[in-house]
Amino acid sequence: MRARRPEQEASRRRRAEASSLLSAVVLVICLVQTQALSMSLMGSNNKGVTVIAGATGYIGKSAVRESVRQGYKTFALIRDRKKIESKEGKRLYGDYFDGAQVVEVDVADEERLLQVISEIKETEGEIDSVVSCLASRSGIKREAYNIDYQATLNCLNAGMENDAKHFVLLSAICVRKPLLHFQRAKLKFEAALQAQDKLKYSIVRPTAFFKSVSGQLERLQEGKSFLMFQDSTRANPIAESDLATYLIDCIADESRHNKVLNLGGPDKAMTKLEQGEMMFRSVSKEPKYSRLPVGIFDVSINALQWLADVFQNESLENAAELGRIGKYYAVEDMVTTEPTEMYGTITLQEHFDRIAKEGQEYDPYTTMTGIIGLIGKDGEEQNNGAVSTSDSLQPTSILEKETVGV
Image 1 (cartoon, one colour):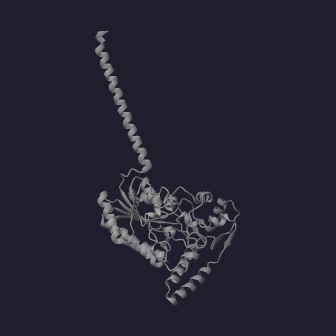
Image 2 (cartoon, rainbow, N blue to C red; image 1 turned 60 degrees about the vertical axis):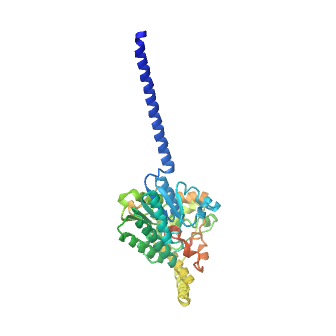
Image 3 (cartoon, helix red, strand yellow; image 1 turned 45 degrees about the vertical axis):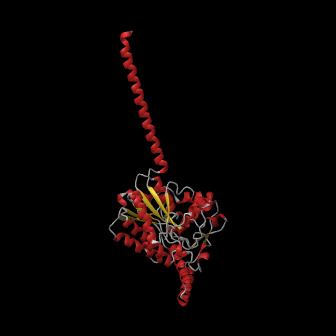
């Protein structure tokens, strides 16, 4: 028995070593799984640095959340921190900015914006991408060129000055037929972006946001009719979360670099009549429609423009432009037809079903009476609305935009 003690001791040591090794392996596996779970929940912040302008807008806030989710260290540029930190702001924005670095800056202030972007670069070492979800809220001339062109150009210049690698632009499909001031302002910036050679770019032109075609929901819930100008006007809108994913994916997806990318949702192009039928199903009401003549736009636009010319009045000019915007979206299709341009998982019917139960955020640009509060304003509020996303340009649901629209 004594002769076997050395062998038993050696066997005991081997078992102890194996147990220790197994414990170490289990510990490593647990650490890896914990890290992976943390990365999936909070974003790993190791994919690079992304700066998002227009972060409090309809698409901008979703882009911030998606950027964090994908693991980018995300800097959200907002004009006023109180907009998201106040009691009302927390109610509206919830967890959209969780995990992001919120930076207060007015993107219309070129000097201050450059300072902020330079500080981010100095702290982080480099900036991988700048994502612009900026757009004028109303689409009137002065605001369009201040925001859709100049403020967005400020972001591009600040990015180039600090050696950013990539610029992702949220544009709009309606610029393919530019009849309005905001469309021409957007195209002017797109041209500047494509002309530079310091960074790569992706220009994303969505068709319509879901919010753009949801403005009549409350009206239908009250038992009223669905208003439209032309039965056949078509759109295939996209969900904000799907669009945000596409925008952030552009950063790493080289197949989307240095391209103009038209983008619609997963649905086929739907006429205004079909959209109305879907909305009635969601609110469980019997369909009824009111068809309005497109000519009422021309009467109003011509009268307002005549008065604007006679009195050299900017407010009247703005009102006429809002009328032109309304007519544009009443008669123009906002669609993609190529399969490669149809993207996302959320359908319009699913969206209508959800907001019929949960409600939707009030926006004077998407309600039936919104136009009343806009026509005749002196432009004071409109001239400083710098960080809204494209689809915020919503004169009213009677003039309901079929697109991202800005």
